[in-house]
Length: 196
Length: 196
DNA sequence: TTCCTTAACTAGACGGTGTCAAGTTAGAGC
DNA sequence: GCTCTAACTTGACACCGTCTAGTTAAGGAA
Image 1 (cartoon, chains in turn green, orange, cyan, brown):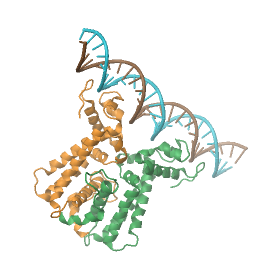
Image 2 (cartoon, chains in turn yellow, red, blue, brown):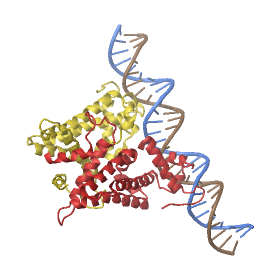
Image 3 (cartoon, rainbow over the protein chains, first blue to last red):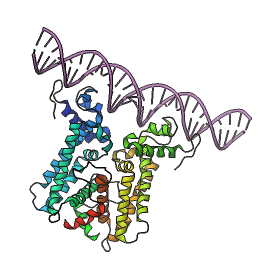
Image 4 (cartoon, each protein chain N blue to C red):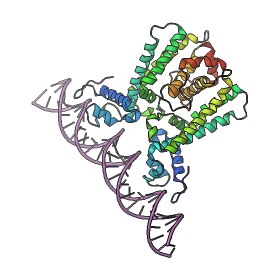
């Protein structure tokens, strides 16, 4: 995937790194093709030879972010074998990523549907593979809770929805989302379900 | 809130409507101050007298969207008094909005934190009020499930997270998010929780 | 009526954005 | 040494949000 050609050592990589740095510093709005180019020490039109447009660069950044995302979840579940504790640990990794790489997290889950057609095919392929890998991390932990002889599809959907919603609405905000104070911790809300 | 001054009848309102139309037609990317102005039949700098920058116009659009959002949830729960059915009906309203006004829905829940300071105070106030009204719609339905003599805060957080995550990840996508096929319906995944 | 004030809007410019077209430069293969 | 080609530069274009200055229309006061 890396280019490793002349002039600049590996501009493809440098542009992705620059983009991530820009986003982590100033939010998704701070990302621009020209700023990435400048940060990589290259003219404003140079990125065009590696990414066919901003959309592809953004997609590459998202793909890279999915990699970090998956690694964070893996690090949290490492060494935990008891199924329920393992699943919760993965969820905590999920939330940790949404807090520590907030800009990336929000950027990853922005609307992409109408832009997918503009993404360079190999980049789109990498994006989908890494996205699937992240999903699998959670799905495999859900397998232990599948109905006997059945699939864990419903469980995956439930857990993924719950942790993602929590991350979006509560975990990755300083406040000001709800008129109430700090929301309860993720692990604390799980038992609430038995009353529904 | 409306201006109702000369030249144009009510440009403030016209710009919001134009913005919503643009977003519903071409997604969040299609929104631009200049296009809103053109669509309202006015010069490109005219909006500056009603909104102090794009951010305020966007905030006004989000505030308006929250109104539609709340009305959709209310319409779905109308006439249902049994607590659990009522709560589920509200969730279905939530999901219906995310599907029928997909662009608005995604736009509403985009990162706004670092832009809040740029929003015109009365518009910010309206935004927060309408956002709180939407939250209350769900919170009131959760009250029936509060622990005896306690608060329903945990329940609210659980339900809001779950339905929001489901809407973001599954309800408002044509596909291509997960490698698997169509996800199970929202009501179907709820019983899954007892196996966790 | 006429004058004046003020808000609404226009016209034009600025820097910044992504993208395209053309020219240059450096390395690889012959 | 020559050519070929990919990497990169330069410059232009249209579009974006925003700022400044000028115009226009409505309402109040004489």
